[in-house]
Length: 640
Image (cartoon, rainbow, N blue to C red; front, side):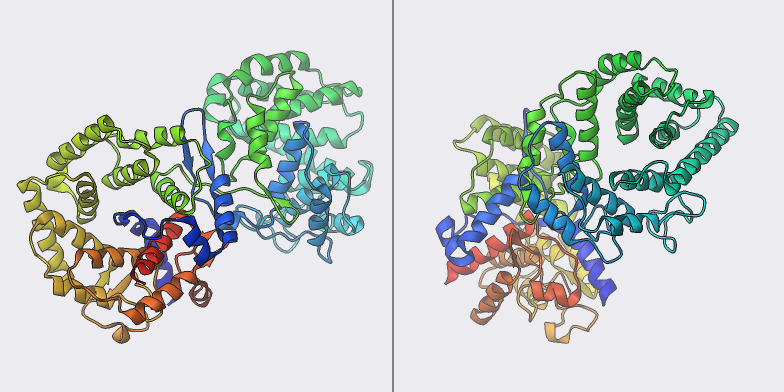
């Protein structure tokens, strides 16, 4: 059962969402009516979510597809945000609240438990460092500092290195230099002297590890070696210097720095690999200046390196903070922090720093931690859905011009899919204050050209998207295209007769395509019968059912789980089939109750919360599911 549910959910997320039906004007259409049904606070929360998921550059803007999982206590983003604000000379809001939260998650063994740290549960050593470093930056310390130190020390191996997880559970099967570096930083913050035995052992481990790496790299690839590994060697050397008072670098370590300088200053390398290793080197060079000032003999012209960083590297870095929403963790605060520190240390100003700080400040979440929306790619589908939700609740705090530029780009791009064109058209109508006759005329021309050029090889689903476009644009469909649509439908009719499974997205595409074919390949009564099999006794319509079976006859391996997006597909199917009464009065009440049970603080889920818990369906609240829920509720309320 669980495997089947997972497959259905994956299919829904991967492919079904592009089959949104035409979006009629809401019969509710006023924020006041939504507030009466869903509550004033819900509208305020959704408006807040719209605001923090709104992204813009100098010319365009869009709405990201947010992830609820990002809005949970998070040590990584809390630490990086504090670091960034302090590097930029800004104050931290409510520092005592952050201190209180971090101390509240310290465990009996001294570790810090925060399972939401991205991308999954972070190694305990990382969590300990983020917690201790954040408290230190706020002028505080753990309530149980000895416990935190003892936990970190419990991860030390006999050879002096450290594990990321524990001595019994670690990723690489042995201690590693990354874990050792973080352990060193954490213990130093907690007051351990570098002459303490654990840290002396760590320094020896790092020296042995670096020497071994250098020997291996010289033997395997004496001329160039791997670029990333060469920069990583600098990271290891950095920690050796921090742990070794009065240490004079041997010649082989000087070569580590010189090789890394060449790589970082190489234009091709910067262009192809803008990531933390290169930037961390830039930060370390500035740390070496301070180390040299304390009498450590580095034998490298660091002033020249700083000058080269300022004149050669900085001009090639992204401007205006546009990369703040890129990377594994969004925004990539690690990268931003390196950039801000680098520009500061070489006497330059970070480009458009206020934009970056503004983004950090607006993501302040209550509860003592700072986190960020995990935004997916800038899709037209999520932007359209967010705009629809915004129009329903009366939210307009966005740059209409920039959003229109984003949407226009899709409408004018001949390489976009028909579904993307449909979403762009619908988004444009939500943004359009007065008709742009020239743009719509050109868009109609492009759709008409594709009608004739591509009809011979369009799939059923693409015909469905075409049906939406031609209907919205009031375009005549050539006879040759009608004939092709008829052929597609006849093939689908044969396939459906021979297959035991019926999927809502397929049925929806059939009904839409039949509006183009102008032929009754599927009799209305047959389509109504198929739709009936997709009704769930839980309330709403399912993704899949057995052809010709009633819901009560479906076997147990076909779960009776209704999904909000496919439920709205069913509502549009009903609108296109004459005299269809699949949703009776009693079913309508059950449907409304089910949709309301899927309401979350920031929108609607794909399923009700009790079904979500019962079947362990890992689904998020999205703009698409929220839009579908509002459309379903509007349809029901229009009949009341």
